[in-house]
Length: 182
Length: 352
Image (tube, rainbow over all chains, first blue to last red; front, side, top):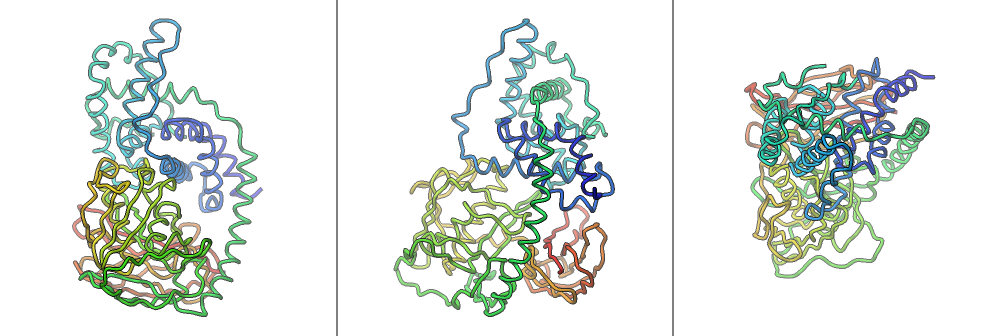
C-alpha cells in the first residue's frame, strides 16, 4: 500500500458520507451526489501524494465536490419555473410534521437564492466550514464569504419572515452542531 | 473547527438555526452506499489514463512541430492583428496549422459556410471564464467539431466543449444550440433558451459569460465588428441578469490581466530549460512567478515584467526543470494596494 492508498482509505472513511450529503445539498437532489463525490475522490487520488495527512486534503476534496456539483448544474437547463413544490409535510406527530413543513419551506427558499449565496450558506451551516475554508472551497475572498452570508440570510429572512415569526418556537429546537468536517 | 457565527455573521440567530437544522435533517436522510471499491478502481485507472494521455500528447506534439498555427488576436484598439503562434503552444490535440489570418473584407456577405459533417477545425480561439470575486476571460486554442463555420463552431465549443485548463469554465449548457451569421463586419449570435445553464452565480458572472461569446465569436470570425446576441431570434435577458439584443463590442476589461500562453495546460516537456510567455498588464508592469512541484514546494521563482498599468504587453521568462515530474507554473500580479486581490494565471506541465 502506498502513502496515497493509505490516505485515500482514511479520507474515504472520514469524509465519504458528509461529502455525499454536501453534494446532495448543493445539487438540491441526491440523484447524482454519489457520482459527483466519487469523481472527486478519483480526481484527488493523483495528488494525494503531496499531502502529509488525510486531514490536509479535506479542503481540496471539498473544492472538488463543489466544482463537480457546479458542472452538473451547468448541464441542467433552466427549469426554475418547473421545479416541484416542496414535499408536503409527512404524516406523524404534529410537532414533527410542523418541523418537516418548516424545513421544506426553508430549503425551498434556499434553492431560490443565487448559487454562490446558496453554496456559502450550505458550507457554513451544514459543513460548519470556517470563513477561510469556504473561501478556499469557492475560490472567493473571505470578505465575499461574509457578504454572501449576510445577503443570503437576509434574503431567507425576507422570504420566510412570516414563517419564522410563527415557527420560532419550533425552529428553536436546535440541532447540536456536528464536530465539523473532520 | 471554528464557529461560523464568529465571522461577523448575520445577526439573525433564529434564521441561522432554522437553516442549520433544516440542512442537517435533510442531509441525515441520505445514506450513501459504499463505493470505496469503485473509487479505488477508478483511481488506479485514472493514473493509467494519465500516463497514456502523456504518450498521446507527446505524439501530437511531434506532429504539431511540423507547422505553425496562427491565432487571431484583437488588440485594445479593436483592430484585428494576426498573431503567429508556435505550434507547440496549442492543445494536445493540436494538429496541422490553420491557414494564415487576414482581415476579412467588409462586404455584406454572410461568411459562415456549411462544411462536411465530421470535419474538425483547428486552432479555434475559445474564451472561457474563470474567477473568484470577479470573473474574467481566458483564451485557449482548441480543435473543435465543425458546426458550420469557425464562429458557430467556436461558440458551440463554449456550450459543448471543455476547457483544457480545469481552472476555466463556461456558463453555457451543452443542451443548447447556436447559430452565428455575419453581415459585413458584424455578427449575430442566436442561442436557444436551453443554452443558458443553471449555474450562473450573479450578474458579474453573467456579464463575463456574455463577453465570452462576444470575444469568441469575433476572434473566430476574424472581425472587429459588433456582436448582437439573440435568444431564439429575439432580444431577451440572459439568466434574467443581462439584457441582450443590441450590438455589443468587446469589453477590454473583461479579459484577465494575465494570460500564460505558453506552455499550454498539461503540456509535456523534457528535462531542461522551459520558456514561459504570455500577455499581461499590471501595476508598473511587475509580475512575480513561481514553479511549484507535486509536493507543493516552490522550486523556482523570480520577477519579470509585462505591460504596465492599463496597457497589455508581452512577458517572458525561462526556468530550469531539472527533474521529471508535474509542476505548476504561476504568474502573479500582486495587489499593490493591499485592498484587492492578487491576479494570477497558472499552468500545469509534466516533465518526462
